[in-house]
Every structure is written in structure tokens, then in C-alpha cells.
Length: 413
Image (tube, rainbow, N blue to C red; front, side, top):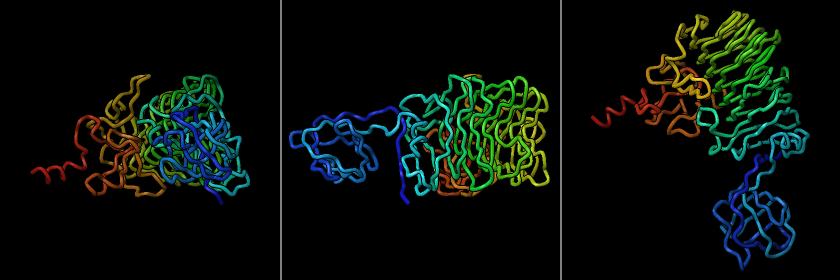
């Protein structure tokens, strides 16, 4: 089994200021007449020599590196650092994520914010595990247009997942007002669970069904879904609208402005065999039969510590009839910011979910916490009091984290 990491984007790092010497082995050195490689070198990373891309496995120093592939012998060959393996996500998928396609590899594709992706694709290659992610410095900050993203300029479903286990995380998926029945569709059926983590999914319309994150088996954590509109059918933020079995679990997600003519559901489970919604916020499901939470079969649904703008949030610790305006920094169309605002009802009323499922404790990025705020470890070393929704409130308004106030006064008394 191999771990295969590939970069996706159009970017190239700084061009070499000199040349490289190779000896026909996996060793590469900056030439005696050239300056050293730049500090952009990383392992794993890439280097292009004489128009051929090589993967770096280790770096001896700033003048020497080792590659996976054998580099042909030669001297004074120009180089580029940081060239991506694939220019499109579609090409990464078509190449089996760079793995063997036989189910033996753990394949990760890292999408960079070099350019805006505009594509549809199905993830269905065979691998031991598949992850489509975004490197730390390339991620959104919790609002649209700030990180690696797919922005559609034509109709059609954006991402279909027909393999498992697959994790899709940290991307912004922007329907851009196009006609899209589904934006992200997990269509594998029963089996090992797939994951949607820390995604922003928004702005699509449809004549029929219009769904944000749909399907099973799937677990969604710390995702934001908003502005989905169906003119003659149902709209849904996250869940499973059809009568099928499977796992549908939703934790610490924020859903806003779901509008359908027949049904409008922020979260919907229908007859999923395992269904859970905890620490979620669902506001402004409007039109037809509108429900922030629609379990369909509530007898086997685990629902607690959720917030709704209507009265459909059931279970221990849930809050009903809470307006979106009182929760979020901005709900203005085109400049939505669904971070929690100072005084929001959702602050400090969630339930501590620990660290299972993996990364459930990592919120969307907030000021001062670029990789997302770890709800399980407060900056002062104590466990944080969890908020509802994808954001954990922090100092974005120039205030001290509520859960850190007591330690602040202890230190500064």
C-alpha cells in the first residue's frame, strides 16, 4: 500500500535562477555554475527539469534533493519548483488520483487556489481511501471567494461520489446561480462512510429538486450551505430526500436560506437507517412545506442541541424561533458571512462531541485560527464550550472568546 499525494492547480513556484546537474540516479543537485535551489523546496513537492515533472521525496540541503523517479543524466538543465501535477480536478480523478487504480493506495488530491475551477466530475476510481482537500494556506476563511473553489458557469451536477471511502474537505463549491439539481451527491449506497468536512456550498437554482449535500452513507461536519432555490420542486440543504437506508449524520453544520415551491428543508433524513443532527443551525427554510429539520421518521433520529428559525428543532438543548439576523455577521445576498456574531443565541449552547467522527471538533476558520478552531482545546488549555453551527465564536468582533474570559481575569486581576 502506498500513500500518494498529488497537487491540483495551475500554479508554478519560482523558476530556478540557475541550472541543475543530474547523474542518471534519483539524486539532483544544483549545478556548480548555478545558485542553490530556493527555499520553496518541500518534501513532498515537485520539481520540473527539462520540461519533465518529478516528485521530491527528501531534501539533503538547499542544494541537493532526491526524487522518486530516476532523472536522466545531464548538466545545466533549467528547472521550475512547485509545478502542480494536474491542472484540473477532473484530470486527477481520471488518473486514479495518481495511484494504481486497483484499490491498494491512499490517494490525496490537494486543490490550490491558483485559479477558479469550473468543472463537473465523478469520483469513482478504486483506492483504499480517497481525499480531495485544500492545503492549509489555500483554504477559505469561512466566507465565499477566499480559497480554493469550484465556480460553475453552466448547469449540471458538480460533484458525484460513486466510490468509498471518500473525504471531500475545505473546498468552496459555488453553484453561481446555475441550474443544479445537486451540488455534492454521495451516490455510493451502503458501505464505508464518506465524509464532507468544512465545505462552503451555495447558490444554486433548479426547476425540480435543488440539493446542497445529498446522499448516503455520508457524514457532514462543520459545513456551510446556503442560498438554494427550487422554482417548481423541493430544496434541501443537507441530507437524504429519498426513501432509502444508509447513514446520514450531520454535526456542527450551518444551513441558511433554502427555498422550494413544494418542500423546503434545511436538514432532511427521510428513511435513512442511521440519522443524526447535532449542534446544527438551520434558518430560513421558506416555501411549500418549510421545515428547518425534517426527520420524516423521528422515532429513530438522534436530534439535539440544534437551532431553528421555525419550531422544528427537537431534542435536548435545542432552540426554536431564533432569527438568522441574530446569529450571523451578515445575511446580505452576495456578501454572506455566516460566522456567529456577538450575542448570537448559538454561542456556548452546543454539546461537546469530542473528536469522533474525526475532525468534528475543527470549526471553519475564524480570525486568528486559520486552520479552523479546535473546539476541543481552548487557547488557555481547557476544553471549550461548544457553539452550534460551523463556526466557533472568537474575537472577530474584537471581543475575547467567551470561554476564555475567566482565565483572562485570573491572569490580569
